[in-house]
Length: 97
Image 1: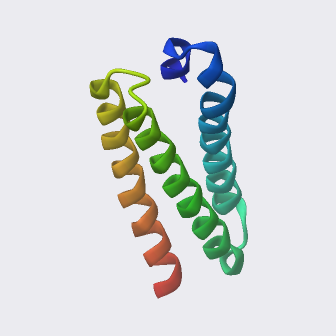
Image 2 (image 1 turned 30 degrees about the horizontal axis):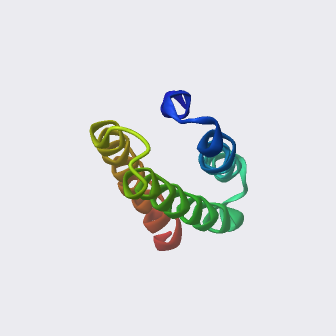
Image 3 (image 1 turned 180 degrees about the vertical axis):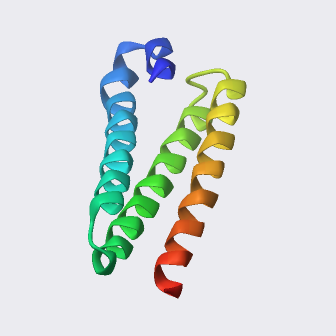
């Protein structure tokens, strides 16, 4: 993530790496859900939703600790909110069928 390049060394290897790990975990669960049999999709989507929530909290920490410009974080949060809406729709459609 480009946002981590702006962090000082103290935060880059703690919060920065943790944030990148959350993004990778989210993507991994989305790929697993895409390729999983129908009865297993829901569990991967729930894990992806949890990863998304963790990512949101980590981004809030960037603002709380004044680590980066708030505008950058707000732009990322709007994209994450959109991903959350799409993920929620996918999860809802999985359990309705």
